[in-house]
Amino acid sequence: MSIPLAGVIGAPVGHSRSPALHGHWLRTLGIRGYYVPLEIAQADLEQTIRALPKMGFVGVNVTIPHKEKVLAIADLVTDRAALIGAANTLIFRKDGKIHADNTDGYGFIENLKANAPGWQPKAGPAAVFGAGGAARAVVASLIEVGVPEIRLANRTKTRAEVLHEEFGGKIHVYDWVQAGNMLDGATTVVNTTSLGMEGKAEFRVPLDALSPKAVVTDLVYTPLETPFLAFARQNGCVAVDGLGMLLHQAVPAFERWFGIRPEVDESLRRAVLGY
Ligand code: NAP
Image (tube, rainbow, N blue to C red; front, side, top):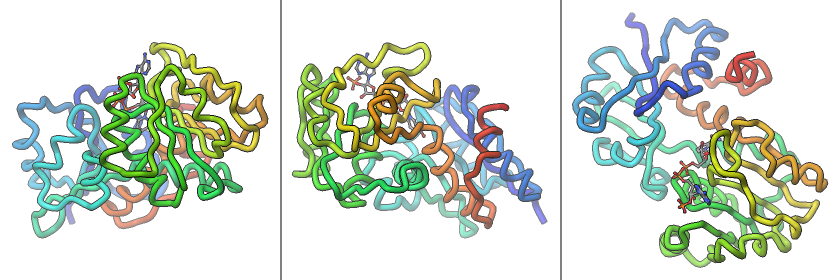
């Protein structure tokens, strides 16, 4: 029997935590397989993807800058990947077809369910900072779980307006300079911008209107406790870090590739954090 291979394709991929994540599951579940980082230039993308199944790959994760381009290469695209306009997971099926999916929204929701058990998405409006690639997955998944209204602000307002056009009437776009106003009565609050990440600009939106009843999460996980999350916690909110989203988005991919549904637990977190 051949040894199943999986990996992450991107450029660069050296920073990716996915090899540590999937490697931990392969080891602890006793699966004889490997997960490797694969740096692939844009120009070589299609040719390389088509060669991977012939070398024993059962699938790959996809990261920047290939997440959108792979949709055109795949033979089958799930509805949610099409809606988001990007894929983070490819499955190389036995019949030769390449299947593209996006599990970021699943990971986002599962992280909140696991770490904010009392979270009620239908209880009130959500406030979302940012309208980049990750925001698209977050917005799609919030709509799917029945959030009644999504308030959205992005530095480049036109990107938020595109989301309003694509995702419909539940989305209300706010000016970036007034983004703090989105918090009034919001019960779910999400930072999807890269603000607060190590090496990036600080998150400076005023958070005075944040309700202590809000469940707050940040997609940034370096550092794990961003100043945005620290403020929320001090304010009495349930604050959920972004690492859990990364861990949970990997579950359906691993299951499809290797045939076993893995667990997200403390030992996985430690392995990914390098402890
Ligand atoms: P992206 O498509 O490049 O979007 C970046 C977002 O940040 C945009 O909304 C951008 O606004 C905003 N932004 C950047 N610099 C800013 C500044 N100085 N002031 C105001 N806004 C600024 O990136 P992405 O893929 O959506 O990722 C966003 C973050 O989420 C990254 O930190 C990424 O690591 C993290 N992420 C985490 C997970 C997870 O599993 N936890 C998954 C995916 C992404 P403009 O549109 O105005 O540029």
